[in-house]
Length: 383
Ligand SMILES: *Cc1c(COP(=O)(O)O)cnc(C)c1O
Image (tube, rainbow, N blue to C red):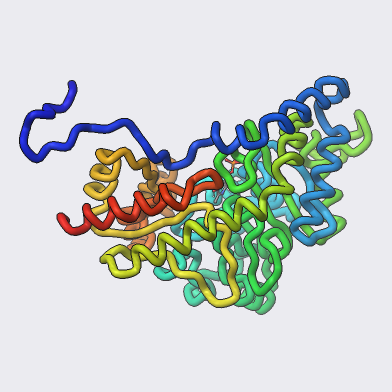
């Protein structure tokens, strides 16, 4: 049904003028190089575990400041394989954020361990280090902080807690390619880190892709086997591994885009600075950056109790937004059969109820970002 445009006070429903993220535009900026890279792989005759994957692994390891990078099929597999490589499984507990994408919890559940959620810090939206120690039990094996929305978790405090209790630290860095904490990059802030190259991530492939970074050589060797049927030498299987490899085409795409990541992240930071400036005097709760952090603004997330109205009215004005994430993980049907569904998590639930992600990306212009804030301010006057 088309809206009645003659009715007084009704705004015609416009097509989206400012998209949340236009991936076609993002990839079109690299079109000739991407075409050339696909052609190179096509001509090589090698489509898995070849020169492109090896080169990308070396380039991304160097970018993160670690000696090892292992390309895998996606970010969830990266998290899952790290846990497997650390022999974390049934009977073990892993501390995760209550407010995150479901994949963080799924990786823990997949190895048969129990995710133990900790509430977010309401300022940064990241796991609250003040609440971690109360969640540690004799079964706890690892802390798995997420660098949510592109800002690293409080890794200095998390490392100190982990050391005090002899726990591993696994970074979920799927949203934080290039983010730094006291000058060190995500991927170099724990015992191992998982990255996703899902197309919408700051470094995105043209399909699924993921990687693990680590400074632990023994762990890296084990992960290289785990991702490839437990094998380093063909038809010799040292462990019951999986098939989860970054493919040559995706590695070649990522090699085209990695050299532009810092510039893209700098552009995101400019947009974020303008958003923060423009929205400073509004009732929106704005993202806060902790001391020592340089975020990469994977998402720019504001909070407001009337989130649904805000989103609908922005959409009416042709501005696309998304919600990351609309349901707290412990409220998902997937976890209703577990003990995790029970404990109250008011902060994680409030996040899920109020967060709204504004348009953000390497091809969003500052002029468009200003249109977003102008529209938001108008709408906020009426709420
Ligand atoms: C995207 C994402 C993942 C999963 O990555 P996939 O490549 O989609 O499997 C895991 N954790 C977080 C926080 C993410 O944003």
